[in-house]
Length: 330
Ligand code: ASP
Image (cartoon, rainbow, N blue to C red; front, top):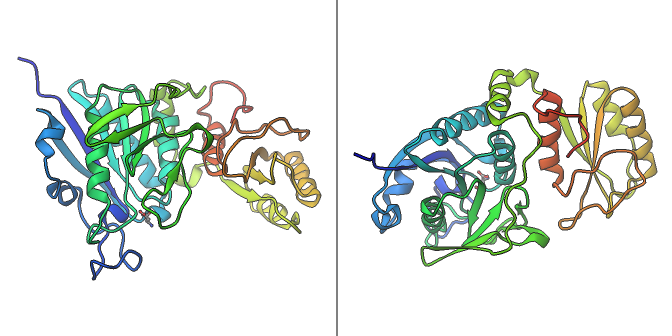
């Protein structure tokens, strides 16, 4: 007899699991208070969304995602890999805070390159709010997870489905806080139905080692030994002091978010030239919210449209040795 398929929901905290003293309080709440079982218990029509599949729930972490750390990423990557590898698991959903959601999504996509749907969701209002958005977002994420498997890591928020590569938090308060910039969402969830965009690009392979050995490396490298990669911003009146201090403190990689088309203040550029001479890997990104660098005279690889914080993850994986080839790709 064929086993009943499972959808696995992993909890990590965030505002979706947050509580406030008043139902009107959208700001003065505490993140990461409710367990994943409590989040699922309030969903109406859950059996319909699951359409015969069973639900597995696991609390992997309970934190405000602004405090995301290596240990939590390692635990989450391990649990996602474990469940995704089970033949009777259809897909995995992760509940997460919005603040670093795009970074976790990119990290999981890069490390696991999932062959099934891995769906992250979140909320902008705590679970106790009168108009809490978490339950609907979780229902929508379950709808995407229950749809035909779509290889990759997806972010579901406010009825939109975003790819891990493009998604960015763009608003500190509004319910529809995420954008995929020029690319747009890869799909939508409407009244429980999933509509994938006809032009949505499939996640491109990340030129990393095969997922299993990439994951092994990420799990086996103790957090103190993860390469130190920092993000810097070019701006009016910028200096090289920050670069010099970071180099002195042993930084191994720097992602610099340039102004516009990747241009840098000359003082900052001079500091970075010196950093490269000292063996630091430098990557060039833009501080513009949308678009990507179109040609640059600077000698450092750009990051193929990744945001600075995602380029930081790619560079650290490179430095960890997760990449097969050279270090030149974002
Ligand atoms: N600080 C919260 C978090 O990222 C914000 C949220 O979830 O909306 O966990």
